[in-house]
Image (tube, rainbow, N blue to C red; front, side):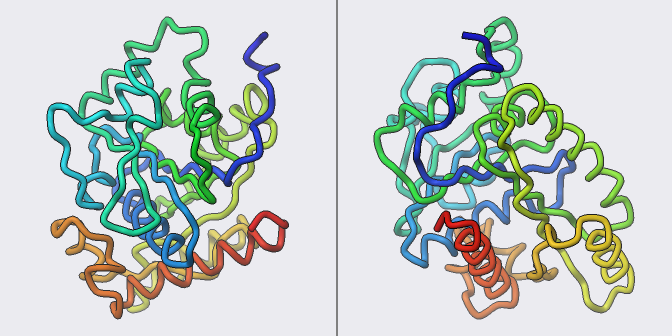
Length: 270
């Protein structure tokens, strides 16, 4: 069977790739806190850390010893995805951790003809069903991100409110379109999340206006503000919703989860 003719995904929870090739846009922060907020509503959530920096893992307080099964082991065939799943400190939120070893995966998989289907096939074989699977992609458009896009039902794009935001977004949109044409015709852009929004800064307002004029309703109404509690939380190994639930950042992520769920209900999926 050719890659383009691979069978459709089975009936499982929605898979979201959280992707942006630019670093420092709040991608991992969004993965951690959106996952936490969804779990707080009673949904079961799996977060797959596909970023070799492993920040989603440390941000959820996951200790990674020498015997820890990670995303690297799973992608290279050394373990099943179920063997890598670990509970986080958030009830209802599990994680597949990552370490810097994952940076070698792209090179080691280069000769594998099924390399872009690795994550999709692993998720299919996972015996437990989750309501949502969130894949935290690395800040690049290499093989790991392509694996996430091939496995995903939809893409969430965190976008920092800065001058060059739209310039970087165009490259990501072209990559998504190439993946849709070649491997995953049902891949959709679920939404763009505006992050690090500073209401005191006219530039944030201008970027938000530009992005909304370009992408319309695909841009979430909820914006994630610049917030010191959001920045502090990872150093304590906690999502901001556990670190300071009353902070503006925590409340914004709770609203984002609510908005995502409303969108899902509108399409009959949640």
